[in-house]
Image (cartoon, rainbow, N blue to C red; front, side):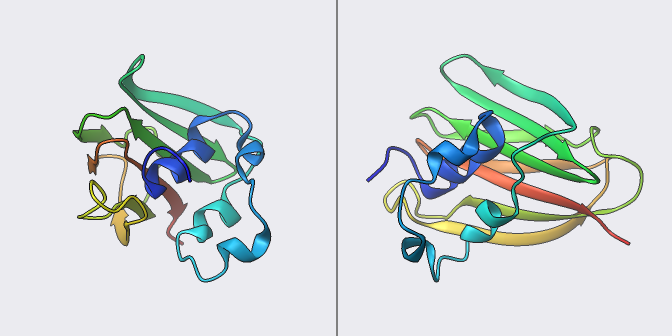
Length: 144
């Protein structure tokens, strides 16, 4: 059991400085969970950090870079949020965004996660819907 949605828990890996402390279950508990891909890929050391928005005690969005890839985490308190995240922190060129977000029923089923992909550039914005206690985690990979 944990507080918040599964996407909120994933976002912690990008928002908090020491994400490995959050993996507290045995490895078999993660088998068959498609959102585990984010935990597998998120690094533990960062080359750059950008705080994109937030208000203490209410919500936060942080982007962190490791090499050419960026990882974004966005978390909210118990209020639903609609966030428009500018992506001007990304470098030149196109990126594939793999988005792990609250599912459409995450306000009732905390394990509901929606996983999607889209191609974006630094001139775009990312629209995120965060359920109460929700979040989103995104991996941005340069398109080659």
